[in-house]
Structure formats: structure tokens, C-alpha cells
Length: 436
Ligand SMILES: Cc1ncc(COP(=O)(O)O)c(C=O)c1O
Image 1 (spheres, protein in one colour):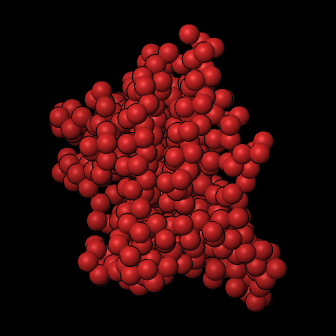
Image 2 (cartoon, helix red, strand yellow):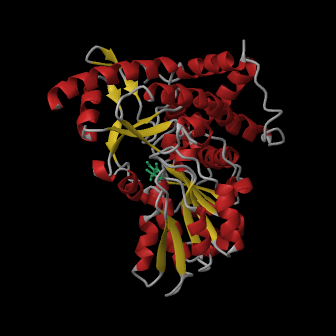
Image 3 (tube, rainbow, N blue to C red):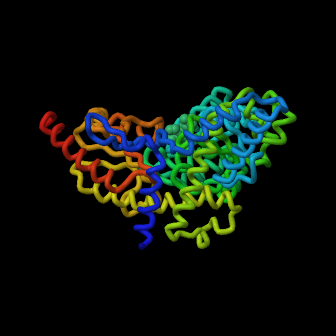
């Protein structure tokens, strides 16, 4: 078995852990291609949530056994999140409602240290979750600068240097685009920001469901993630480099916050969701075991020296990325045969710098019309700007800042891609006879 076959085998099997995949609509198999908005969950998640309700359903703050077990489990879950993203340990992690909420919290707390005339940099490539919270600070006289992209959606590093010369206090930037799938060089972004004296708030949401992240290696100071895009329940978690915990003071429980990020978790938490998150991490650990059984090793990778649990969790993302690169190449080769297509972001020749997230338009066809026809044929994919509002306005002005997005993850298959292009052909023939 060569590497390509071993990856196919590993991820064909991974798909079988997801009971929701394989449904049908109007007699046709559903192609679930909306993964950038939120992924499906495996049986590990479903079982874990059920187990929580039977054995550990309790409130914080007592010492009887059910509560104690629940409280320990939540610390375990924070440790798993730390292992996944390469944080020091559970004390740098807090669970919460979603990533957007964390960006608002970061802006609120970091904003307390800013004064009128200070500078902040946000990017034109980002989802609004990591844009809006900073824009709100402009109302207090803080200068918020937009770091622009070029015609392909790449961040313009020459302009970044100019912005850093203003000595901004904060740079808010995404690790990967949820619209074009472009992976940003976070290590370079943070190194340049730190040299200019700025802290970096990285949006890790999109990258986390595709690649093995390492917050320490990348040098990010604050970050947030959506567990429901990492094959888990609808929640999020935040990462705070422990050197900066004391910057977040003043929010309800000051003394405690100085010790641990999880005092962001004020009030009651979504325990069942946190348990489901553990299930999603059990799933990733299983993927790594399956990959190893198929002959893969992590010994020659950057994860070789990682602690055992991190090897298991980030290892799955390492293998997933290798497989997703096959999906990406296959998808882009097929897309090249579609007439009048306009793809946003990295091309087939640059596929190593992107995720299998493809936004494109067909000249002469309104994205929403195309999207609706595809939905009717069982393709679950969305059109619009996916809240990467500035980026899509910049890249697709003649389509009103909108495009069709096909977003794949490792449980999608080459066969699904082939089926999609057959359906797209049918839909385009029908639409062209109606439109032209
Ligand atoms: C890049 C990116 N950032 C942030 C978000 C918002 O995440 P949440 O729903 O967890 O707030 C999304 C959701 O699509 C996203 O893709």
C-alpha cells in the first residue's frame, strides 16, 4: 500500500465514525460541503454526551462524587484542548459560547489598556468575528487600521511593515481564511508584530479543523476556536498565553483570573457540550491510531517530540492535512475544466498554501441562483460572504461580494468531488438554457 492508498484507507474508515454522513435528499445522496460553517460529529461525541447525562450531570461547587467527577472532567477537557493546539496546559484554556464571544472578550479586556490615539491592526482577510470587536474600539478614539489583501486575497506584507511602523498595540489576524482557504503565515505575522511591540490575537477557527496548530511555535498571544468546526458540539474555547493572564483583570473575578484562563468561564457552563468536545478528541485519537495501523508514523514530523496526547490529537490533524491535500488537488483539477469559472484565492500550483475550501463563481450566473439549484440536487453548500465581508467585497465585486463555497474536510471523498462536478454540469446546462 503506498502513502496515497494508506491515506485513502484511513479516511474512508474515519468517515464510518459519522452516522450523519450518508443521508439522502429527494432520492440522491447528500453531499455535505458546508464544513467551514460547521462539521458533523462522530459517534464518539454522541456517546460521550449520553454518558455525561447518565453519570455526571451536575452543577459546580459541591464535593459529592457526581459533581467532583464532572469538575475533573472539565479540567481534562481543557487539557485536551491545550494538547490539540499546543498550549502549555489546561490553565491557558477556557471554554465558552463560541469564538466570536472570545474575540469580544479579548477586545474588551485588552481595550481597557488602550488610550485615545493608540493604534490597532485588523485584516481585510478576516471573518467579522475578529473584525467587529476591534472596530468598536474606534468609537473611543483608537485608530483601527485595515491590513489589505492583494487581488488574490493574500495579505500585503509590505503594507504590514508600514502599519507596524505606527507601533500598534494589537494585531488581530486569522490563521486561515474561511472564504478562500488560504493559510496565513502566522509565525511571520507574530514575529513582525512582536518586534514592533504588538500583541497578536489570532483567529484559529478555520485552520483548526484542517491542520495541526501550535500556538507556542506560532507565538500567538490570544486565540479562539469553534469546537463545532473541530467535529464537536456548538461551543468554542479561548487560548490565553499565561504571560498575559494578568492583562485580562477586572472582569468579575480578578484574583482568580490572574491564575487561570478558565475564570473566563464565569457562571454555569455547557457541561454536556464540553463532554461532547472530549468525544471529538477521542475521535481524533482514534484517527491517529488508525493511521498508524496503516503504516504511518509521526517520528519524522514536527510532532515527534510532542507529549503523547498532543501527538495523538495534533497527529490526526497532520494526517488529515495530508489527505486533504489530495482532495484539494483533485478538486482544483476538476474545477479547471469548468467553463467561465472564477476561483478566489490560491491556484492549483499553490495548493500547498491552502485548505480544501473553495469559493468561486461562474461568469453570468448569480451565486444564489447557482447555490439554490445545487441545494435542490442534494449539495449542501452555501453562497454569500460567510462573514468574510471585506474580503469577499474585495475579491468578488461584480458578484456583489458573494460566491459559492464548497468546503471539504477529511471525511469527504474523491468520489463525492466527482459526483459534485457531475451535478454542477447538469445544473449549469439547465441554468444556461434558462439564462442565455
Ligand atoms: C474564520 C472564522 N472565524 C470566526 C468564526 C465564528 O466562529 P463562532 O461561530 O465560533 O463564533 C467563523 C465561523 O464561521 C470562522 O469561519
